[in-house]
Image (tube, rainbow, N blue to C red; front, side, top):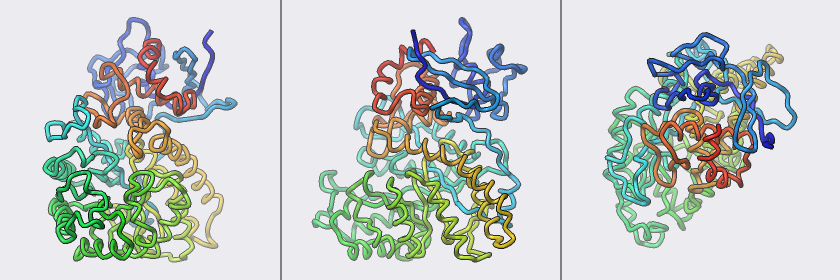
Length: 525
């Protein structure tokens, strides 16, 4: 007799319910008939009754979502029941598949009057031919333009349909863990992709990754090449500047990736090289600090070096899963008079909160700000964001940043602060962003890794959020779908597995077994 293995409280759209609760003989809506908002594009949609107690529509929206209790059984079947208010169940982890957060669009529109405390950028995925061979050289025909464009457009929309949110989220593209693997990409391909993003993201705020792939060395000779004499220092600096200038020539901001060729050099030597690379470009380039556990060969980018050069960049993107190290990076960047952008690191939302607290402690009622796409952001002691999670749930991120900003501005009133109002905004922020941190941790730091930085959870989370649909292509081999079947099966199977993982019904050390049984499980679902 099957037993219950997990429950979730989930907010589901009519399309979601139609997927999971079809009656025998009724076809599910194919994934390629849904757009990124979950709207049914089929002119003859399947009926939703008896699963939804409302009039059928061919345009269900996120605002029509109802709250359901999702119960999963040991034989892989599941049951849905409307729950109304969230049901209190012992030991149940609540996860809202499509949270209905209120977004104060007027607050975004009037950000000049109350600048926002976090400037958010999403690390956008790129899509590639799913049939590309293992370690096959990636050429331009492998790049899936339609799918990559959908992701660009989805993030630009903020995941909502209100025009006030458009381009509130900046985008970082051709990032190392999201859309580029230089070891199997030619310099020509990377340059074409950089140009494609600049042309197809026109009007958006784009940061574009710039590496050293135009300095050609055999892969086995790159590690520590600047320290061991295998690389010409002057030519390396010239190559890095060529990349920066190419991206700037496209009208976009370059991200300077740390390179393994620096491995073995001390802080003084690395500082001199970076200063030469950035000469005449101070304040125009995003610096990227990576290191362990992502690329341990870039641990040469130390906190001391960060302190010395942070002020040379437009901002500094850091990546470190250890909270104490995030705080150290924050302190080093502040000492260097730079601007911090967190990655998909544990407790990233608490780093944002820490930055807001530090900003309050300056007791400056008119801190410096900067403007982007008509939105105004504080640029001082606060912490900002550049992370892949934003692309998974942009609406959630926007709602959280607004609540944190409202808390900050209320606290800045000093003796006139209405503390119950401030507490309400802080509580809202934590309720919104705590699940976000949990999902980000599962996505980027689970036990089931394809690479140290990019895991199977990321793929599932993207399918779960509806950002990736296989019809448009899928990521590179070490990031490709874990699931077999047709396009629509992959789409829905990914969401179903994500539910199980995120609810705790399947622990991370059982992921491989679950994937192996996936086809049989989902025939019953």
